[in-house]
Length: 217
Ligand SMILES: Cc1cc2nc3c(=O)[nH]c(=O)nc-3n(C[C@H](O)[C@H](O)[C@H](O)COP(=O)(O)O)c2cc1C
Image 1: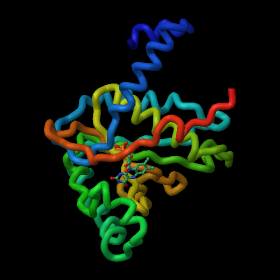
Image 2: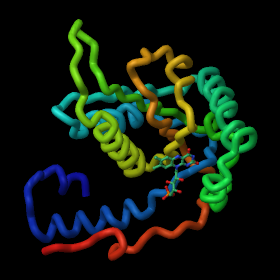
Image 3: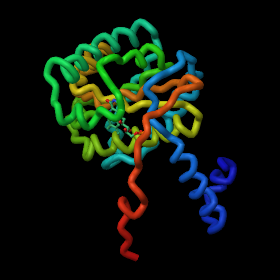
């Protein structure tokens, strides 16, 4: 299929065929919260980041930064800090409605997937750019970085890698752990790895096409 796409020209039947295959492939993507410990080749992660960094961005400001972490000691440090935040979220200062909405996913303050995943890709964005001695605005920085994150997830999925979009409620600790300047805000931890063979995803429903699309043709 990729060879067909590389031809980069519109052909009615070919494009239809590719779009149908993509629907089938993307419907197989599911969030993975348990990992086998298997290592992913670095180049696959780097390629996924390159895909993400090719994303469109407001005024082409490319407001993102992708930090990849595979060092076991640093991953464990991030787990410890994450679980402190999660303990507040789940136990010390719970928001009952939010926890109710999450209950079908069976998540809790245990974030052992951070150790067992191959890589964490921590995604930062910045609203203001102060490099080169000038101050310039990054337009739609968060939206642009969200699009780049979607492309990262797609690239991982199509490369056979499982992932989780992990968003602890407060992510300031990630700047400190990775020594990233405070002008960058952490937006998400993309956890990437390989699920154990017997891993079962939670049963969830997806909205039907007619619920998410209104046609005005
Ligand atoms: C912005 C965003 C934040 C999320 N944060 C978390 C999270 O912190 N922990 C978690 O276990 N799942 C998280 N998820 C995963 C969602 O729970 C998951 O995408 C949803 O239940 C649908 O399941 P699926 O990805 O398997 O289709 C997040 C997803 C998104 C898009």
